[in-house]
Length: 331
Image (tube, rainbow, N blue to C red; front, side, top):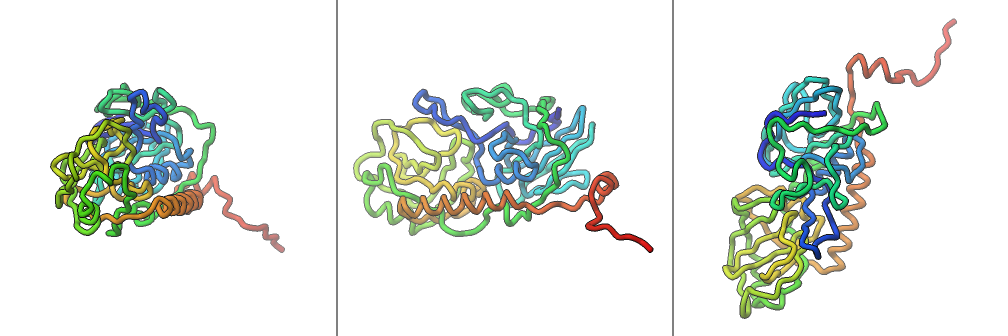
């Protein structure tokens, strides 16, 4: 079991999300950065879809209570007590871990070798913060919360690490977009403007969506449409012409035109952007988007399957390891 001492902002239990229920008005929620969450789970040898703790800006402080807890911090932070991010670590009973602020990106993750014992609702443990559903009592984690961990059935997992620049996608390449589903409702010049001019990420960013500021995207007639479904990464444009990119806790349907959708493999890089970041976009075809997603998925699977072992020089680790590669007979 772990105890939350200080939660940090927007700290919640998340997994891959609650899919298949938008027709009933229930959004999927789930992790914002699927790539980094998958890497966090790989560091502790957990299934890639296992629930994690997501935090924004500042990591939580937590304490192991009744038994050692093996975990990993995925995020550019400097944990306390000599621990490091992007590697497997173990807290002793009553030991406290303070993660601290993230540097250069927005969102981090805590993954555990033993699964979090949160209720499963409609096939997911994800917290939908706005709806007050799932996770731990349907809310953000708070000081004093205690979270149980279910035995994983496997002990002595190898300790692993990853270099931060391999885990985080940080580059200035354009965010790729697929046009539609209402691109025909925009002035043709608007489609060119979106990919030829930079847009700045405002401070109005949360799990529902990120607001951008830049040249207005002009509609042919009106921003209003009959409400229809909204996908992760939909680029919605209200009457003021300023795009809003809708994310994990988006509304299930919306009545504003959507000029484009962000290619899913570019969403991790997009959601990790900080307010004030100037972003550029580019158009790709559906076929190009599908090829990019397949390539990125295969590359991430290879990365997670081949994380290097972390050298542990503690007496316990050395005495339990096979340090002899062969047998030598003396004379």
